[in-house]
Length: 247
Image 1 (cartoon, helix red, strand yellow):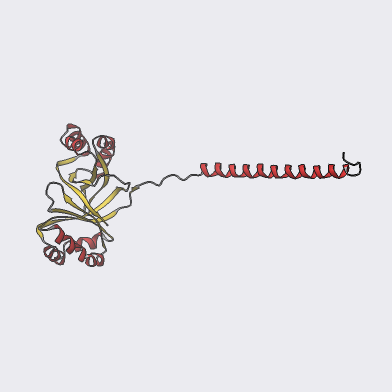
Image 2: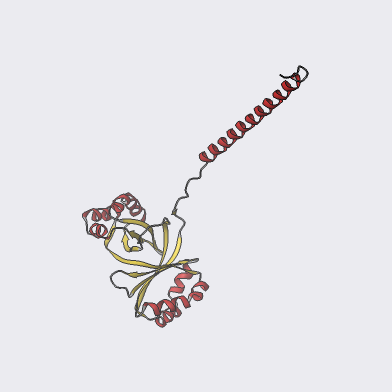
């Protein structure tokens, strides 16, 4: 039995104990609420993925040529990188033709398109190409790329198509309208632009995710009608290649 003298002390001790527990429980509730609030805030402020579309004009120098030996040519190409950099030209993509692996495609980015054009016509470039085993006359095209999609596409297969149109703006509209049609046929838009001096001469690069569908589409009446709507003149020239290196 508890002594009457000790009873007030026990009551006071018990009161302090429960008061202390109640304080801890309240603190825990407050902390949980604060944590939940933080979680909710984080979820609602989650950032949206940035767009992969680039519309800032990019000067480029595109070259296609035949080589006697790809390995020898590639070593020579890499050895002349300082010459390109001195002219504001940066290596971007190297590809090889699907039909003829000795046909090589080189895409470079240019800091100054006028300077790039001068470099493309310089006899020193021709000499460097000959040393690397380039055969015949190369095709050197200075272009302004006005639209690019930088999203990753899980296919190294590309098609570069060049053609002439009646009007640049009319072609762009017709081309945009046909995007889903191309995707349904295994063709994904990657980049397009025009000749540095003539916006009626178009260069279009696409990725191929289904070559059978793409091949059939290229021969279809659907594409023929799409070209007519876009004011395409004559028959486009197409170069299909595998990407072998990205810089």
